[in-house]
Image 1 (tube, rainbow, N blue to C red):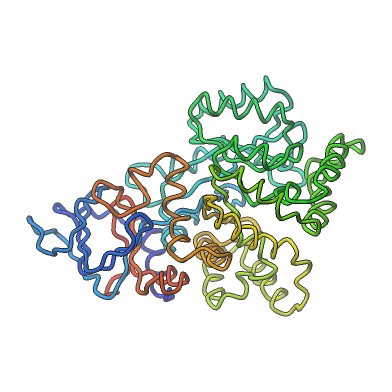
Image 2 (cartoon, rainbow, N blue to C red):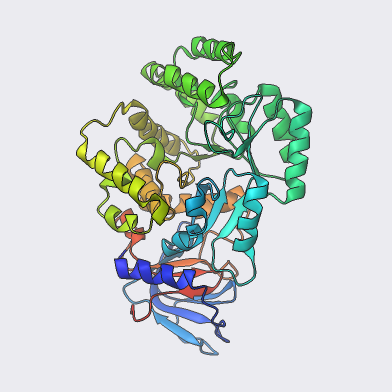
Length: 465
């Protein structure tokens, strides 16, 4: 994406442009339309008005003629992108600027996977306000953790909450539904009984369920019970030849005889068991585990878990991206960038390499893959990092079209919205991204943004055509 385009779109968003919608809609003509449902359609005219796509046709003779016409010759139109794993309130320095950054990079919908309701609700309400220029937002409320809470506000920001019993779990989900959440998110420290209670409570209320694999369970046990799994975390144990031994050790550690914090307890187990599990990889066992997950969307966040191999710091556009970081974080991010680029030590890359391999293996065996980033955790710039994730998914074995599917169709499926979102068809929501280059030639071309359509509103820099 050219700097002038990004800055112009972001400026337009932040100015909260209030121009009225054209009375007869907007048409993008002579454009190549690409989506994972219909494939490639050349020389198309796409007409939208309000928040609906009204026509997708090979003809540019629309009657009545649209109020505004954009010549899409030589350009490519894809559905608006999703980021399936963000935390809008994790870092206050980013919260205000996130909507503009997401839209500037073509992300028209986000799934917030963890934040305290009282802090998150005002942010969501502002993004959903009539006329607001912001992505569609779907949120879970807090991480539903166990007796010990990882994100407890002490060792880590407070975005989690305790569920020490089945009764507490039931009450928590009931309260979240009353608060208006779109789904729930189960975290790693829950016991099997509490996990089952949370799943039951979510399902009985029609709430989709995202989850980490609890440390007290195996991926093949927990995965089939939920709608999406995050970060590939704890799958490695269920793929190890000595899984039973590692699992017993893990259960013993969970007794927490030393009384350490939830964060220390979880991190200690990851550090002690992750690499040994991978080194004892059992292909046949892992294939059985993968088979159990064929109905569960995997959101691997490869830009995070595989960063020692392919960091955003190395991307040619990273210097440009850094200009979008809020002033309060500029120095920290630039220091981290310089330290990374000057260092030759990338640490242990075992998990990074295994994660790329596992995603490829899952994909080859029919497991659905979703695109998410964990923004803004671990210096994930809102918007920018979703394109990095698409690149990593292609590196793992997805085709560019399948990578687009992970950021368009899969999130719509999670919310059972595939009849409204994820493709460019008549009647679908008017969320679109116009690109200057073909993303099927190179997935990095999703960064080459000419214009964004969000909820039927066209955002484009003046004189960009």
